[in-house]
Image 1 (tube, rainbow, N blue to C red):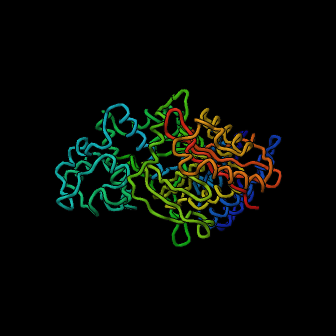
Image 2 (image 1 turned 90 degrees about the vertical axis):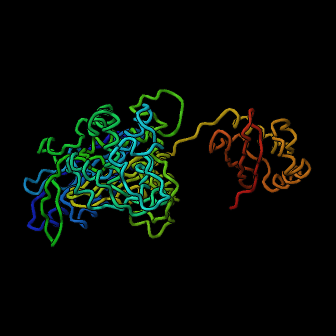
Image 3 (image 1 turned 60 degrees about the horizontal axis):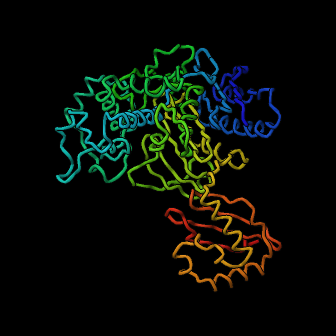
Length: 515
């Protein structure tokens, strides 16, 4: 359905005012002239999204940014705006390299899960089994449980939130990290009672990866995930990448930009040290989304689909928040929990969402995955702590309202198909008894045959004959909803099967659809 549309910044005449220069540069970007038949609607839609990000960059004083949209396994749209560096004014392109800060945590989490799959560690084992320096720690209460690997993944280890201190520890040498661990750390809360975001916790996961894999965590993550996915420009040593491709980080204060020194790779890199490009990161987004829906067939990896889906599993400490972006204040609140390197939220319009931001000296980033639609949106910037959550979520809402999302269809099981045929016959004949042994033992205990005949007669008298051949919408293998067009209106219904072999009809709802 989609082709990849790549667009990068083209230089405009330079203004003496940095903010005005960026605005002129953003306005000068034109859509590629080649648009395939049927893509005109997407072209107009992407133009609106370009404006969302151009306005954001201007308002937030961002020298340069890149954003991408992944759908059906492909980078269908990517756009660079502004410049990589203010000195040479190199334009941002889809191949420009940005530090993505805490969006790195998902790479760490999935590598831990792969080591679990390989029998190298257990999630419910004590973290000190893999990091001996933790064994002498003093816990906040006598009844405190000791930290498990799972607690580190879910941010429930009891550590205090350590933004922005943790960011500045990226380059900490491994020997210094060992000394820090041997000295012990203070706790903010008793482990296992509340989620609290911790960069220290993910640095500990990096040490666990190193100790259980037998090689530095950066090497293990690279060989486990990045190399198999073809992310050849992605890594932890930012200075090792070609300088002409790197987006220089900047800090905005007192109405001016100042350059931020690149932090070297070190012990805390597992929590936020990844550098990548939009082209590379799209491979990661497409791979994560490919784990949905669960299905039969080849499971090529590099990690099993079922394992990827574990990233949504938190520790049952939910919270409520408003959606990011301009629509948040006017919409329903989201139920949120921290999974493993991903924040999991249920949104009243978007459904299941996985997201994570990244804030770093010189950089900001955000990613949003919509597994039910197979779509991912991400953005990188080169200004300190300019996490781009607002334009990313605004983009998702714009795509949704434009009908861009194509919900993945749940396959119709044979058992549900057979039950649905029986439901059609029940309506046509006005009698549930014709379903015979397809009815579960509870069905006629909840409403007898005579009662069902009266109910069916009343509905049929109001609506007349209905098109019972209309497709059913499965909610799973044993439940489905349907809408029939009838002579005098529409009928909605739901059929629910039992958890038995063979499944039987345990409940049936039929009602006239309100005008």
